[in-house]
Amino acid sequence: MANHHTSILLVDYECSGIIETTAFWGLIAFYPVYDAQKRLMLALIGALWFFLANTLRLSFVAIVIYYFGDGAFYVAHSIIGRLLFYSIAILLYYLVFTKGQLVNQMLKKQG
Image (tube, rainbow, N blue to C red; front, top):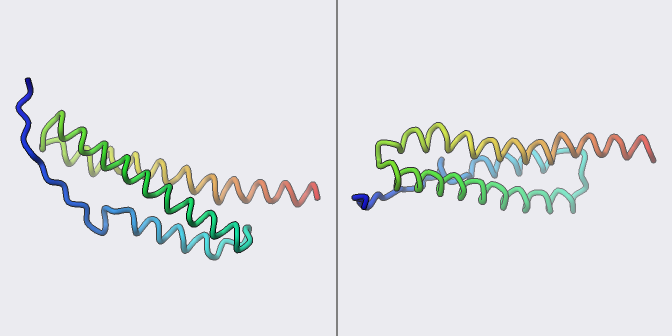
């Protein structure tokens, strides 16, 4: 049986995903491809997306600390956790901005 102890993890402003969500909102607000209603919907979806990505990242960090101890915090949080979070963020950016632009261009050519 493993000998575990209590670890307290504090989530501060920089670790909450708020900065990334706000940056996404700023980009979506001025992105010329979507109308206002679609931008609002994408802003809400983006906020939920970043919240879930950050929850997944924090859960991963907590699980790693549980199984490997406090010494694994830096690698789990600063390296693997960030790679996980930003990979998910890049997927959102691709879907909303890159793919959205390509789909709109194809629709304009067809119409």
